[in-house]
Length: 310
Image (cartoon, rainbow, N blue to C red; front, side, top):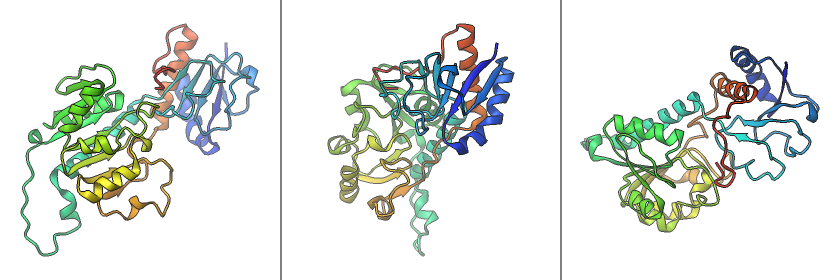
């Protein structure tokens, strides 16, 4: 029996995903008709990006699951017409890319590389960094991405603390949770990495009060979601020296507007949302596995908890 799969994303994504998806579905033993133009009542699965033209899921009466191409689901999870199971993207490419970006920038700030890259201008300023074991790194968010980054940094010898809403256990990482745990996690964070999902509970989590809990001069890395940070509070903390530097990959508005203060601030590094990206080949295998599971009557993986929002 042929499974009808609607690809609902921006047109340029179809060119990137058509061949990898068809290959992955075939390799998974799924006989599929993959197209961009099914009638809604013919669709068994939707491979989905939240910026697609599909916003009303009501007509998709036989759809068994909506399979998100992005790790983030904040732009779709609140859609009241979406009653089908919703799976977010968790794949090797996303995880590996994020781990490489986070590890690279943690090491950059730990070693003080910016001073040498930009030049000491004739000054023999010999500043020897501490060993990794003497540098406290805190990661907020211990999902698939946060856990991978925490494990990698712990493997390099960093003193790693991880925080999550609910209890977690990760080898080599001090795991904290809840409101009291958050205050403790922030208080020791010489380098703070934000990898939380964006929900009502996490928006503006890094506000003036929580920025004040950081050790003075702390570094912030945000490859998670732009709205995790109160922008005005961060700029004030940078100006006062409470925060020493912020390396930001995600923003409330993207591309970051040309007149945004982050561009000109001497203690901000902007990267253009490149910390992690869905790779068509690896993401297609995740999609194909979920379709295979659906057809076999097995549980879907990476399902979104609607109440939690991720």
